[in-house]
Image (cartoon, rainbow, N blue to C red):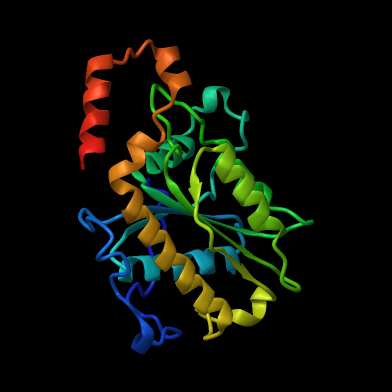
Amino acid sequence: MTRLRLLPDPDHLPALDRRFLIERPAIELGMNTPRPRILLLYGSLRQRSFSRFAVEEAARLLQLFGAETRIFDPSDLPLPDQIAGDDHPAVHELRELSLWSEGQVWCSPERHGTITGIMKAQIDHLPLQMKGMRPTQGRTLAVMQVSGGSQSFNAVNTLRLLGRWMRMFTIPNQSSVAMAYKEFDEAGRMRPSSYYDRIVDVMEELVRITILMRPHAGRLVDRYSERKASGTLIDPSADRANAALVDSR
């Protein structure tokens, strides 16, 4: 059993005006192969889940921009600490998907002024460290929210806080869709609007920053405290040689 959602109509983008589109927004910024790997998480189990609809629109755009996407279905994800040792297939799959990813998209409904429990449970199941690996550290992150009422930024602000806590690089742009029930048709497709255009902007930026960071991600999260804890010694002569090489350029 897999918890990956099948993306319906991946090539059908009725709200997109291709006359203004750059299909490979990061083409001059770095290596676009292999394709950027993006994990998308949403925060509602409703049949008409607007956070899921928004994530699906984002995934279609990301694929158009050259990324590989995977959408996690949290339907049977247990609560944190509900299962001894978090030994549950859904938890294992979520963690493997996070390790697979180079970047992520988190989209939550706003409920009582913050993110939903479903959204928080997914993030809580991602440990900072797991068997010597870090499932979130160094990944890029885009945050989005949907609201039933007027536009708000409570959920995206909370997601930004969590992204920082998970040691991720959250991109500057973000999406907040107000009165989401008006923005999606009966098939769950987003209508043309400034809200849709903002999601296009956010996904463009996520791809660009993921590609820009790709060759440097390991170096950016190379920390003194972690080297000290693991006993990883630095060869001073090699370190000086690398510094001299950089200075000579």
